[in-house]
Amino acid sequence: MLGSLPEAESGALTIFVGGPAQLFQKWSPLLSALGTPVHVGPLGAGAAAKLVANSTLFGVLGVLGEAIALGRGLGLPDESTFEVLSATPLSAQAQRRRTAIEGADYPTRFALSLARKDADLVLEAAAAAGVDVRLATAARAWLADAEQSDSGGHDYSAVLARVTATD
Image (tube, rainbow, N blue to C red; front, side):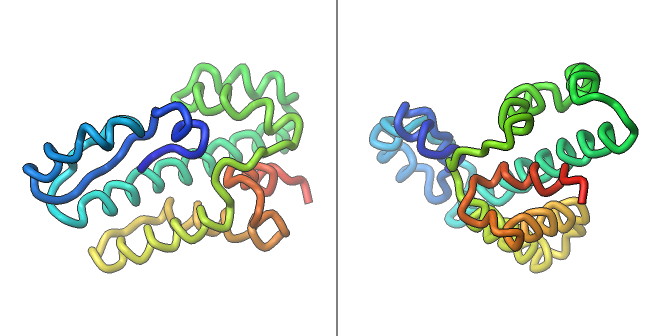
């Protein structure tokens, strides 16, 4: 599934389901109480879809953090950097994460340690499939660095604090 506690509480999860179409049809009404079920293929495809979705989330956080760090390193005020980001494909994520970044407050919705574990699963699956995922490897490295800097119990978006750190 895609989402965390707030989405689960509001019934807004995206639920990736693998398995026979007939079983998907049978159980969709029940799953719909939690969000939107999406049939993605045969048994095992739901787990694969979750890895695909997570790889995008981790990559976006890494790219966003690096863009902010670059802006800071080049002397741009955060206000200017966020203005620039508003004109890019990262616009929605930059806006969504801005308050957390500026306040260095990352309320836990999904633990960073679990995100790093999921990034490990992405890399393992990619290796088994013979797929070159260099950006996912870099995103996993950022997650591991953040986890090792004593942020493992924090939200996975706390990786932004690590990526944008000036040390």
